[in-house]
Image 1 (cartoon, chains in turn blue, purple):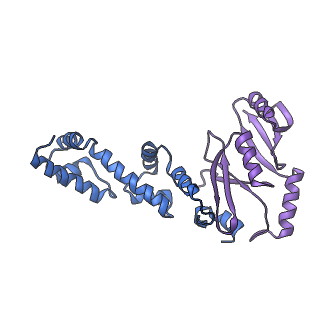
Image 2 (cartoon, chains in turn cyan, brown):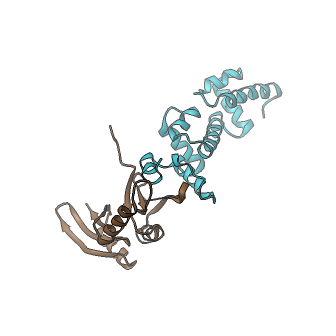
Image 3 (tube, chains in turn yellow, purple):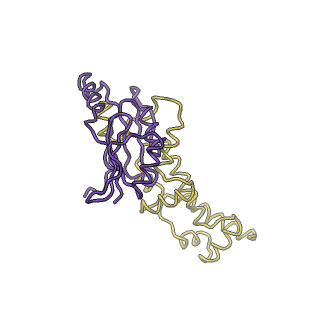
Length: 136
Length: 135
């Protein structure tokens, strides 16, 4: 367990991650906020919180992505960018690992759970089909 | 540069019956099944091993793009077998053919050697024919 002063530093590092998870973050960036070496920050963080700084970062990003996939009409690429990833492949792989399903499938499943028959936005359907069948 | 095809349309006579066919007979997964404005049902399926191409099972109905006459004509053509759903690939045509026949899928041609592989030709429960090909 971290001592009191180390815990204060760790919290600063953790808060920094929480405040900036939507931007690219390196372990060095995080550790710098805690005035610890990257290796030491990683080891104490894991020991204290039960997850590595990177696992914490991924968890925050995936949680935010899940919210955006359900409540917003952003494309998967846009969600990927909004939560701090530059590679759609990396984002999709991490999302799959965390949730057990790809972002597109997650969105579909959640939408499909709704019992309301008319609540799905036409934008969820490719425009050519929406135009063809819905006239919009 | 266009890199792939995401959706292709199969006109079906009844979406519930088509879903039963593609899901329970052919073993496809359901991609989307949701109703949107105006009661339109967005229904897609795909083979279990490949979700890259989703097949849209669409009922031709009077609407923004179809007059009643046009919708009726398309339905009539579907029934007549004027449209093809496309080519479905399999690792073993004979085995898949046998399994589908056992499930009641109708075939117009059993597995036959062709220049490009072994091909059987079946028909869905709307009247759309499809090839089943082992390359």
